Image 1 (tube, helix red, strand yellow):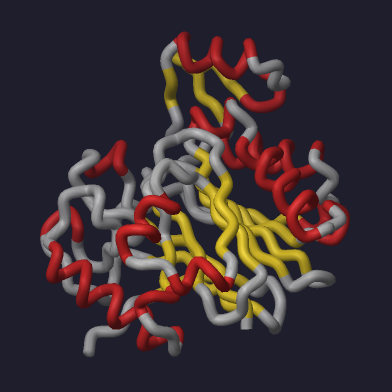
Image 2 (cartoon, one colour):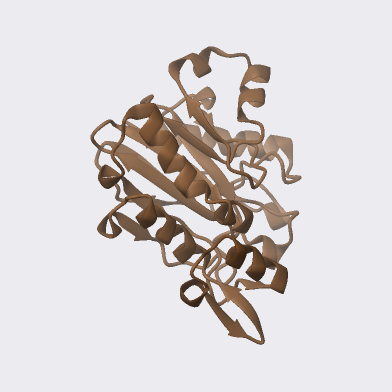
Length: 259
């Protein structure tokens, strides 16, 4: 069996956290090689084989590999033990329109799908709780990270100061050129534009920094936040980039699993 090539994050010895690369899978063309997102047009059988190989590597059943259908909003879903007993259709309904997942159930791998957007993983070592967040520019403007932290606090009693955060591969300031309407959306949302943007013929916005600042504002210590310094647009040979490859291409899966 072909084995996916993963980039692992050293968050805590009690969790497995990673981002997939493009290598080590069954998908073809712009979906090649490793893609498990079923909403971007890839071959169903290739996705099934890729999921199987990832589950085999992680030592879990397919039912325990969870990825929501993201819509660039701010809905956060809780994965409890009861979720695992739902029918396939009920699961799909629960994961529809969701851009962040959180859980305290060991052996369940929760993750988000990106290709230039910013994936963020959170872990609370005190309560053994995890969260995976998808933050595109719209979700960032709507402060999905802040809402996810609030959700963890409300659901599990987490203290933000205990959280460990990992920002995964996404588009960099240098590559994220935007129109005036996107710049204005950030400005109207009261982001510090002098800190997060630069003008180079067109505006550029630093999405990883935007989300790092949200984490800090939510109470996560800066020393607890790590960023993976890889731009998906500049490294589309290893990581999918919708801006470079087009939207009919594969997606990165950034995930965390409690052990």
